[in-house]
Image 1 (tube, rainbow, N blue to C red):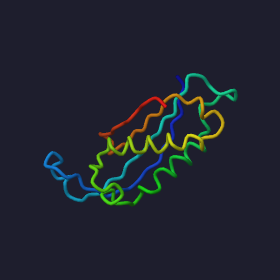
Image 2: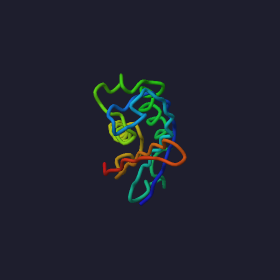
Image 3: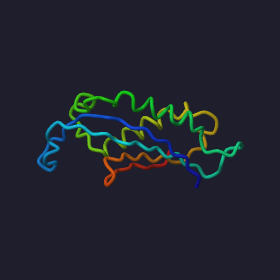
Image 4: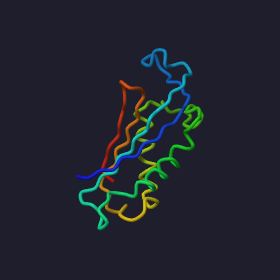
Length: 128
């Protein structure tokens, strides 16, 4: 299995309602480093997985509405955990697959990883 991964980041604000979240119940900010890995079984005829420039452009466009946003307003009624955001970003990147250029039809999986800090991260990975 081949993969190519692109990275960006977002700065957000949110609160996580519920005693289970302790002090994170209060409004707080976070900076997430976001990695998206694109997987395929075989390389394209030009020996690549996906156009890295287009992959990065798609990631930037998916992240733009989240960057510097209050997620409590972007996703009213949702508990915007890191895991929730991984799935949201996965779904948005998958929906823009046609923007990834030549070879995108051969992609078999995506993995989205959000790094909360140097010691904690969450991911969502699934077949396309």
